[in-house]
Length: 245
Length: 234
Ligand SMILES: Nc1ncnc2c1ncn2[C@@H]1O[C@H](COP(=O)(O)OP(=O)(O)OP(=O)(O)O)[C@@H](O)[C@H]1O
Ligand SMILES: [Mg+2]
Image 1 (cartoon, rainbow over the protein chains, first blue to last red):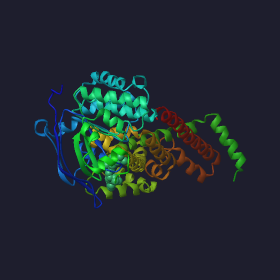
Image 2: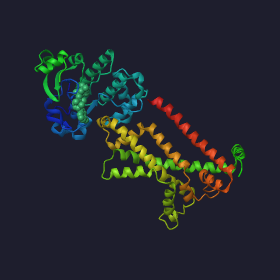
Image 3: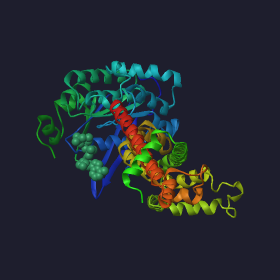
Image 4: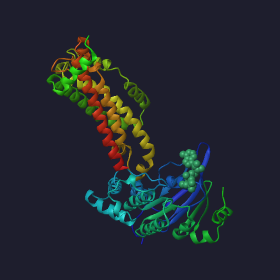
């Protein structure tokens, strides 16, 4: 299923990010393989978004390193092009929904100009937005914008897709549609690394869980094990719905 | 001195009869200022965007200078262009002094800093919002420039209008380099200055009214266009 060559696995080596004297990501070491959906869990402010941005190369670690196994084979620029991210607050460009996707495809430079609209329409259809293709992206509803951002990232068919709370502002029906879309993206060979606050969604989607608390990696375990027998009291409290800090 | 009513009535007659002198003067004014703003936008938009994104030593100083040049007195701009174009100046051989081209050059010099400074501000603000998203999509700073300019287009129309306002209103620069030659370089503002000092109030007033109306119409059109486009594009 994951036969094509990818830049994975991803290795985090004592990854640390400090800002203003505060250590926000604290010495995280982990290896994230290609063949499972990874869900990063943790309370507000645990460092989930920071971790994704560090992995994606948007911010530089103050200490430690992010290493992609394919870095040598593909080269630095291509490693960046083989990743995509959907932000917690996605930025859509002031042009049509379709043009947002064709713009991303043109930056990636894999598809010729004539092939881009078809790929973009497929991506829109996969998140149920085919009917708003020509509408300006900025007039779409919050949930539609979120889905457009996912479609834009998925259209790139990256090796790795980072999703930072992809369903935060969606109604239950749209949530299910996004979860199906995420499964389809995974099945098409893209590694999923995502965060969510919806524990039901985490149970449905996660193959493995990274549990963060105050910038530290508390657990890195298969999902079934994490939800049945959390190893740390913080994770147990988090799963019970207690405030963890 | 003529009464105000009389002057106004005479001015109105000049306007409604389409007085040739008045029409020619108004047309030249528009041509010069619009051309100057077009050139200034061509330079100022990319320059402002580059200043918003580029990191180089001395960048802060360049920004301060451009911001300060927004207040460049028109006569000083005129003087600089005069020295440049006068027979002994570096561009003297082209014989441009006292031509409409000289006026376009002087006004371009006046308007470029306004457009560049406002563009820099608008694009810098937009970049803080867009930088991670565009970086994630694979756009470097250079590739981001056209994207940011396009997404800032509604705010940039205002910057360009500010430049057009300055060009249409100024008299110092075009008077110095154009010379207010009848039928060649006479524009609305230079003519108003001349006719007022000569005491020909009807022509001065007529030109003043036309100038006001033109500026009003341009701004109203831009506002309506902007509001409609903004609503459509979100
Ligand atoms: N640029 C920054 N400067 C200072 N502190 C920052 C910066 N960016 C993030 N932080 C802090 O780092 C911590 C982790 O932030 P992060 O956004 O990663 O949390 P999160 O786990 O994604 O939370 P949420 O669930 O609310 O999205 C927070 O306390 C935040 O205030
Ligand atoms: Mg977050």
